Image (cartoon, rainbow, N blue to C red):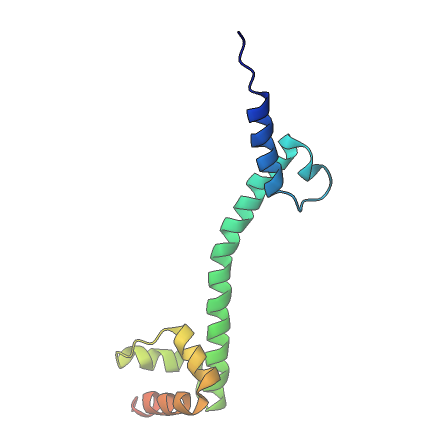
Length: 117
């Protein structure tokens, strides 16, 4: 007796189409095109996870720079002095400190920039 795989194939295809449910037009109805859409979407998702890290780093640097400039210094000199004094605080924490605790951040900047001489 011949074994048919119709139900299995249909289930597999329906599962894939469910993943591209929000796509417009044929991209969510046609199996072949839906599969291509899913592959492309996964590629974009991978790239954007990397891009997100870059975007946040840029944001943190901008926040730190704006706060340091308000105190009369610049970002690059501030970061260089942090490194020279072996103070290892990452940019995310510096940014958070600059936003939520500006007084403590000011004290840190003054200590780091004042000790350079």
